[in-house]
Image 1 (cartoon, rainbow, N blue to C red):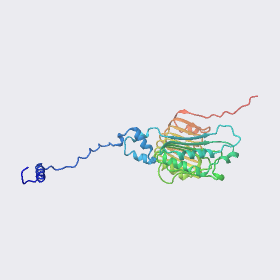
Image 2: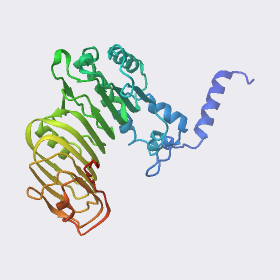
Image 3: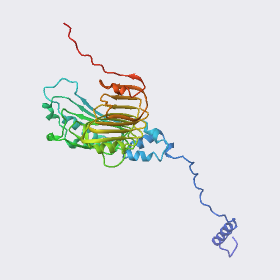
Length: 357
């Protein structure tokens, strides 16, 4: 050490000179991660098992559909098996029991199972109870009005494929003999609906909204308002392809069925005064009951069943002259004259019984 020097001060000065001697470098932020290419997403890279687990934990069908915008593989995941709920008791072909079967235990089991179901998305819900016993035993199998509403709410929130809901005790009406009202909820993601509750019940569709995914609709028994039925078919089901109606109207009404997507129609609606059908894609048509006036526009019609055809008040505005199948009634020979060629003609022949002595 040189006399008269301070080692600590010298070291600090030397260190400072070294730092000053290092060329100055401009610091740049870290480069951003590479951008994803068009159409790529990070969710699509996850394993199918993990995607399916995410799907099942979503809160509702609506959330699952919205998630499809994020991942291009979501449809593939949706194709994997989903839970199905089936509750079925068919006593139709059984021998009459000494005592009428009670509907209440069946209803309780359905309620308990739906309450315990933790799957946010269900592929299919089927609730079916059928017994055609004598009306004297009907009191034990009446359906309380409020029991069906939770089932329909469950379907509107969770079912994505098919809703099949039929409860048919004998002479089914509401409690105390009064007809009940079934408010059909808006099931935006359900593809098929089949409902039936007996002749004493009125089925009322939602006043607004669309059944966006619905392609198949069956309504058996029950009754509907004519204007509500027309609005349901013509306005609220834009993608409907198959329609089966076996019910009655609250009051006599003119029914109009206008659909650009409908391909098959089975029509058996009581109290229909006039029926108008305008369906450019319709291929199969069955008109079962007698109706005062019918007018049909269906240029692609291929199969026709019409046992009550009356040429004086029933007509075709635009229908092809060649049918693949025709089934007229016993006295509907005039219907055959409406077409030039029929591949499959199905006739009902009545042969009276003759007693030979």
